[in-house]
Length: 342
Image 1 (cartoon, rainbow, N blue to C red):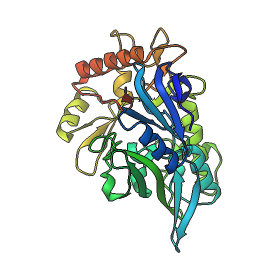
Image 2: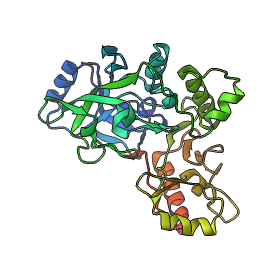
Image 3: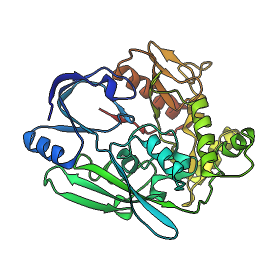
């Protein structure tokens, strides 16, 4: 067990924010985690995964434990499904590619999402019409206080839009150790969302497959979203806000180009990126492509805030606050951050 002092977390978060942790250690199995929990029984702990959904605004005056539990295992199967368990420290995109190689269907629309498998149920990650709640079967966690394993079913996770019990009700109480996904042997293709069909056509795809859908998603995401290895970012910074249908119709009468997507409960989900594009620091300037120092709003996707080089987390947070206020002022719609702020 190697414990490091005053280590920079720059390489451990996709924003590339250079803050320090007072103490830092990694674990790759339950025994190592238990040893660390016993060692730090009276310390404040931060469990870090892929660092792809976090914005550090200050040094961490505590202990950071990095989850590096690996492994992908087929645990059972029947005529229709395979049940595949992934260690929480497995890279999410690499896990998706492994499933596609095996012809296990269900996660192809979630290709190229940054982060690790352990974060997938915590955030209920989603893209192009698919969310983790659609494919997650169960997961194993370790209770930080009681130091005992606990199993959660899909239902136990109380999934919502970018939400689960681990983000609010049980925040900072558990460490996700592994996740089991229920994937299909016979795919049901989901190409209705976004530009997937147009991209498949551009690719010249004649016969639909999960491999083709995954490549289409990779192409689309690569064309719109910055690579965190090149420009620091955490993907979508804001959630798409939900409003009542009555409120949407009123806004639509004022802003005829405003997109909206009706939810099953009758509410309407707005496109946060579109809202942000219509606003800016000045009437004639859009947030999209805006840059202040090294903090900015990406030129191809207004939902993505970026660190061009050496922005501080505070500078990126302050930019996000300006965006929230401008959208509130123009549309009277409150944007909520998807990224966790520390």
